[in-house]
Image (cartoon, rainbow, N blue to C red; front, side, top):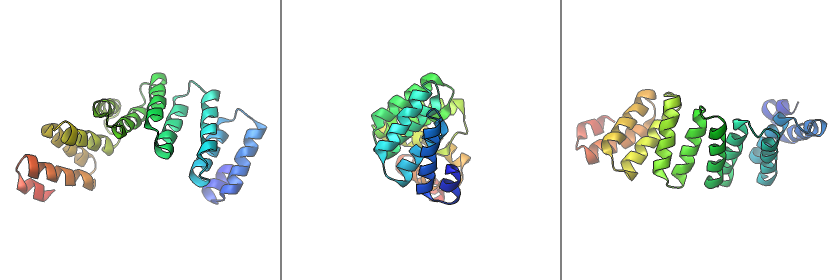
Length: 193
């Protein structure tokens, strides 16, 4: 009922009421905690209560890597606490080292802390696990190579891979054009991009 109120009827008060009722009926029902945490963070701006529910999820299922993923995402997106996000993504990786999204999200968090070497390592690991994971993986690697490491050949390689993966990814075209113009003196290719 909570899910129906939340996603079908957009009645978040009722969704919260029924999620809470489910938790009262079964204090180990992790789906209700996850749903309620989502409601608190997205619809009630109550990060404190959302964090309590994420903590409870981990308490109930400490060996479930997804629980660390969700709390890490919360730290990253809502609290902008990238250090704590990295800790949670790392714990998730420890539990499930074959999950590419944990490496992707940790790589993004490292990037936010300007830890580009760690960021690229995680993005590359993500691509080793799933070469088609996300076009942003290739793009973020290209950005780091271009602006942090000044390795323009590598940047060009990864922008091109991003464009091959998604020919509508305009940011990759724009940055590759800048690269062609400023570092390869190829105005013709820059103009094409």
